[in-house]
Length: 91
Image (tube, rainbow, N blue to C red; front, side, top):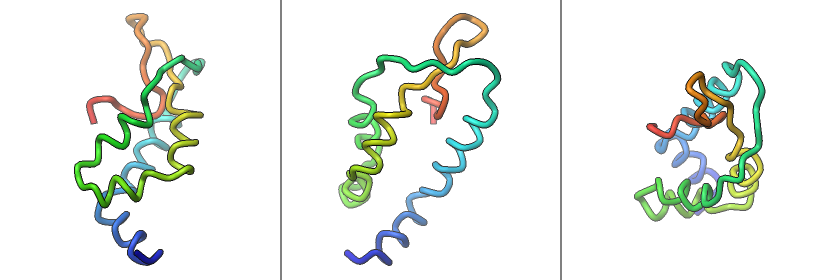
């Protein structure tokens, strides 16, 4: 697979939409952000890709490092529950 193929696939799998979603959610935060001890985030991220080829494309040290470093960031909601800072678990 060439770099051009990877970039073409990322357009298909809405990579830009994911990046935009993370950026918008983080920029909309009001209040302090905390680091949690969340575990298994990278595995959950990979499991979200049903196509094995797409999963392989996201199985890289860049994705792993980003998710392990920033994936557990959270804020505290009005009800006192932790709310992920970067992504909406429902989506």
